[in-house]
Each structure stands twice: as C-alpha cells, then as structure tokens.
Length: 274
Image (cartoon, rainbow, N blue to C red):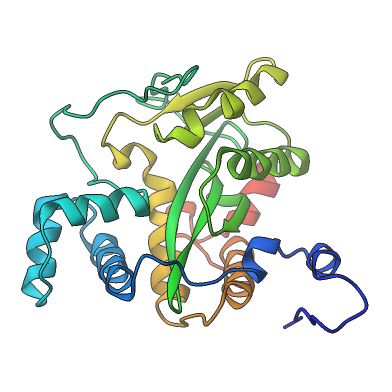
C-alpha cells in the first residue's frame, strides 16, 4: 500500500494528488464528539445494517438493552449526524428544508423499467467507522448494472464534496438520464442541483421523506461494503480506510458476481451494454 511521507521533499498535498488520495483522508483525526458517542454510532450502524426499519424509538430500546443509558433525543441526534433514517414510510412530521433556494424534486423511479446503463444513477452518503471516530463516504451506483461509477471519502458532509464526486463520475462515464438521491441538504442545495442545468435532458429524482427503500440499490451496496470489508477489517486512520474502500470497490465492480445480474459482475453488465 502506498503511503504518505511527511518528510518527503514533495508536499503532503502533492503526494495525495499523485496517489489519488483525498487530503481529508490523510488529515483525518478523531472527532471531539466523545468516545461514548462514537461507540454508540458504531453500534447503531451495525444494527441499522441488519434492521434498517428501526427508527429512533426501537434503536433507543436496542441500545438500552445493550446496557447504554440513552434517550430518544440523543439517538435522534446521532441518526442525524450519521445521515440515516428508518427505511419505510412514517408519519410526515418533518419540516421541509428552509435553506434559500433548496428544492425537493419528485420521485421518478416508481414503475420505471431500468434496462440500460446510465439510465439511472443513485447517489447517497453513509457513515463509516474508523478508530477513534468516523468519516463519511458518498457513492454513486448505476442502477442497471450495480456498477459504482463514483465515490469519495471525507470527514465532513458538504455540498461541494458531493458535487465534485458527481462531476468526476460524469467526466468518466457521461451523464445519466436520471440521478436519484435522498432529500438531504447537500442534494437539495442550489449549488448541487444547479449542476444539472449544464446537461439537457438530465432529470433529478428524490426519495420520499423517510423512505430509504426508494434508493434500495445503494442501500444494498452499503450493506455489502460494511459486512464484507469495513466490519471485518477495522481501519486505524483515514488513509488506511481510503485504501480499503478503494480495494473493495474495485473488487465489487470487477470480481463480485450478483445473482440478480445472472451471476455477472457489475463491470460486465456496465461495459457490455454501454
């Protein structure tokens, strides 16, 4: 594994650029949110991968059953920090984003027949545990082939970070006809949605509020990544985590057959029909 050398004549930024490593991975340091919160988030993440329909009340009871003294307010705050919500419909008690210019788009995938690459991409952000803290991973999956067309690791969730990930994927593979996301502020921001005005015919789709099931293919990818790599091989730092994710995504795209794809790999499906 290539490593960054602080004593090298090249700057750390330049070494990161040459190795294709985001600086945020190298400069990662544990968050100040406290070791107990990090422990709780790790437990929440592991349970959520098994029972994504658990909302705040059920998860609170689960954590209490493990011996942790937590209340609904704390668990709800951690859910927000991890950018997760229960999969499935729930009462519409949340308020729309109040940021200026933020827009919620209709969900376009219901009943849609997805039969070719670059017809629909799905994009999402997930919490990823690392020693002493956590980072965030954004990924974009081609729904037809399950091919991961873009991804990026960071210690913060920003609109610019998401947009740069999308821009990179479009440069490599061309623009999709539809991009589906959740209603998170990173995606509803005009800084992100304004990017679409550059591509005639590209449509923006958003999951229903509290319906992670609307983005089921990217949710399944998170489960595969975490159970097959992240939980089995804990990372000590951001750089190590970056390389492990890169290794897994290359394996997932090129070598991991999917039963739903007739036991072909995502890359075989993406390239054959492209």
